[in-house]
Image (cartoon, rainbow, N blue to C red; front, side, top):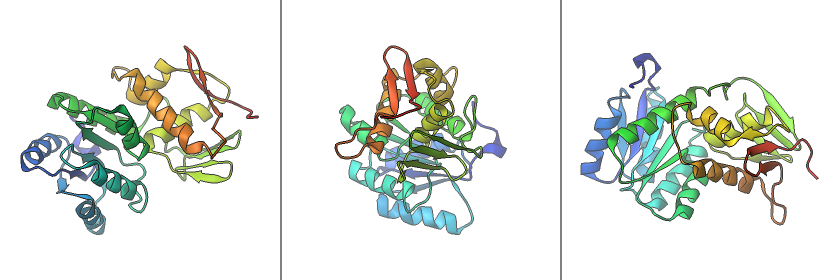
Length: 248
């Protein structure tokens, strides 16, 4: 299941604040990545990320462990998706949090996947592989392919990796971007939930149905204004989602 060596990113960056968990995580990641760099908190993570860039390497994957406080995770995600200029790097956050609202906050802050612990090492590896496959290419389109889609006040530019809604730039996660690409490529057409999930997570990878709903909710929230909820992305009950060609 390991990826071919030539396709491996140069560095996996990990936020972990436990010696025992650090050893286990590094062992897992070193099976799939040539190098793993570790930091304990947001400040150190930012420093390490900049050192990696200064050394001519690139970050290909980020993992935030449950041993790091949520405040630190949110701070680091803010850097990664903002000043860190790492909009396309897959981010996996592991947590022991039982509150779904907190996990939604993590996704809305820029994580691509939230994995609740405890879970077996095999599942962690499978999630990592799925995120890397998802980042490289979708099943039927490449999010990085040069294209510019415009519908109902929404602009999705895959070359600039940019989303604009009614003239204002919207900061989205890599997975949210991929969802929008799939929807705006076919305005007015309903994409079934199963079809959309397979294109995002893979033909043979099982994820909770709620996962897609969380990401759609996150996109709508980011595109909503005070007193003006976003109605561009429509839920077709019992079927899936579509981007409306016209918005009243």
